[in-house]
Amino acid sequence: MDRIHGDRIRVYNGMPARELGTEGWHKPWSGGNGGSCVEAMKLGDGRVALRQSTDPDGPALIYTRHEMRTFIQGAKAGEADFLLA
Image (cartoon, rainbow, N blue to C red; front, side):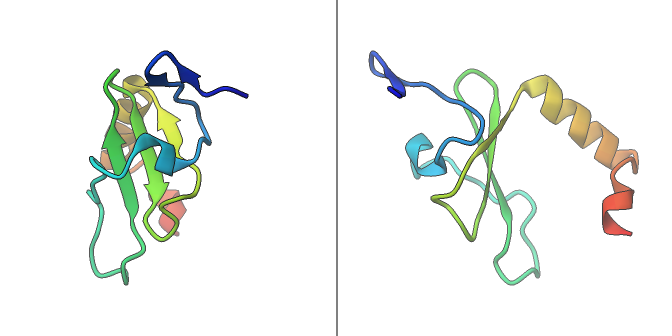
C-alpha cells in the first residue's frame, strides 16, 4: 500500500511512528517512571500522534483535536481515575 501522496505522507492510526519523523516529539507526561513515557506530536492538520517512548519505531496512535480535548478535559475532571485503581 502506497503511503505517499505527492510529497505528503498519508497519516493513519497505527502507522509506524518513525514515518512521522524524529523531530517534534515531546514527553508531556514524563516523570519518575524510569523513562517509560508517552510521547506526543502535534501534526500540521491539528491532529495529535502518540507513541510509547520505549518503542519509538512502534505504532503511532492518531487522534483528532476534538478527541484529545475531550480526553484531557475528562482526565482533568477525574473521569479516567478508574485506570489507576
